[in-house]
Each structure stands twice: as structure tokens, then as C-alpha cells.
Image (cartoon, rainbow, N blue to C red; front, side, top):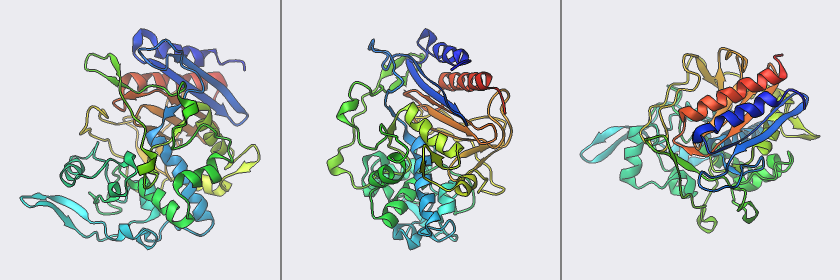
Length: 392
């Protein structure tokens, strides 16, 4: 593959001086895969080199795959974007809005607007994550709500923090979408995704369930200490015997080549290597602005160990599709306006440029999220991809 040297150099630069222990990345255009590569080590304290087939915890990069599953059911008429979601998931008809606290605890009121699939997919339904919302963090602490990653149904018993449709607020919306998929399809989300998306696309290393065969391929999660150095974080797997559901908003394991296959299917209008997961018009619909005049807002951190403050592509107005971040302006030397993107908590990132038909995946395992060193390296990788392929 001619012209990929700048991409590999960008990866090598990312691991200089120990700023990032290791990275795996992949990119493609309409003609197919243009780059798959890795640099550094899978752990800061072990000599094993990072491999292109290293397995990563991709966290919120799960969301786009769950959204694709929901849109399959929309195509079949089993879900509707503007149907009250409580008609499928009664829990959402009981959900209240958290308006504050008094001496007796949380103050809640009934919402005046409906939670819909469209609002869930665009993060405008009113849910929040405790990492980026202090009231939600307090509520979960006082009510002893378990973390979503545990797969306990009690994790879904959280209130809204906004009126549905009022504002973009990043939260457990796609976790609720996953439950909608499970309810309508009759399958747990792992089974549904394997049957209808991951299996057909040949994403054989993507699953909610850690596999014994991954033991030597699983990249280590690291924490960034105040002095900038890294230390390994113990990240035990979920007890599958106690799991009650699979959270649609996070939890998948995957590899850079696997995730790129999903993006390539979207570049190709919902089809890859003879396997169609979505209609081309559905893929186009998912990439449109579905939040109207609302804008994506910066996220202040209320858990600095897990996330820094988040403002990706600062200075650019950003919208949300079904379910992707959309930049309203082109990035110099990189993605076009109207490109789709998102990320995972452990600093994994992707973008998909429908205009140039270029997509890329960049995976590390570092906390907190929005690590400046990783973001700088990701930007260099993206520019190198466009330098290698030329702009459309």
C-alpha cells in the first residue's frame, strides 16, 4: 500500500518519551483498507509489543453499533424514531426529572415531554452520566445505584436531569436504546449484535464477553498520574453469571481492524463484502443532524480520574446524528464538514467522513478520557491518513 509511511510515523511519534504506552490504528477509504498498524507496547510495564489485533475495551464506541441495531428495527417497523419509548420500555414511563435536593433527599418531578428513540439516540432525552454531571453523581451515591458496566438492571433506575428535548446532555440514553433492542427483538444485546451486525460483518473479535483466547492480546488500561507518567489499572472482567443485561452505551471489546469493518460498511451505504446490515438511505439518515437548533455542549468533569473536561474540536459548532457527533466545519488537513465521530472512555476514537469516504480508528487504553497527549496523537494520525490518501 503506497503512501502509508506518514501514518506509521504518526503512530511512532505517539509513543515517544513514554507519553502513550501503545496504540493500534486502522484506516480505510471507499477502495478498502489503506492502513493497519501498531506501535509501542500493550502495557507500560511489559515488553510485549502492541499488535494490530490487540483487544481494547472500547466503551462508548459501542454506542454507534447499538444505534445501528436500533435502526435495523426501525427499518422493520418494529421501532419508530418518534414513538413514545415507554410504549416499548415501561421503565421510561416512570422516569422522573431530578430538579435538586433538600433535607429529605432528591427532589423529582414528572417530565412534560416524551422520551423517544430519536431523543435517546441524540442525547436529548434528558439522561446524564455521573462522570459529567454532579447532581447525577450525588443521586447515584445516595441511592446506591450500581455502575452501568455491572450489567445490573438496578443501574437503569436513574432520573433525567433535563426535560426531554430541552438540551444535549451526554448520558445513559444508548443504554436505554439497548434495552429497547433487547425488548423488541427478544434477544439479549450480545446475541442480537452477533447475529445481525458483528457476525455478518466478520467482526470476530468484538463481543461484550471477554474470551480466554484474548488473554495475551488484551491491552492494559493505564491511568495518567499528575506528573504525566502512567500506571497500570486493575480492570477485572464482569461476572457474567450475575449479568442481567448488556449496556448498549458501552462494554464491548474490539480491535482496530474489527471496528474499521463496521465503519467500512457505513462508508459503503450499509454493506460490506456481500453482507448488508442497513439500507443506504438509513445510513444517510443516521448521519444527519437530528437535534435541530440544539448544539453539543462541552462536558465538565466531575470525576477527574475517569475524564478530563471534554470539548472535542473546540471552536466548531457540533451536532448529533443517530448516534454520532457531527462537525459543522471541516478540520484543516483532516475530516470534511458533516463527518461522523465519537470515542470511548479509555481514549479510543474513530471518525467517518462520508464526503471523502475516509474512516479511521485510533485505540489506546488510558484514563482519564480526553487525555491531551492522546488527542494530539489522534489528530496527527488523522492528518497523516488524509495526507496519504489525498482529499476527495
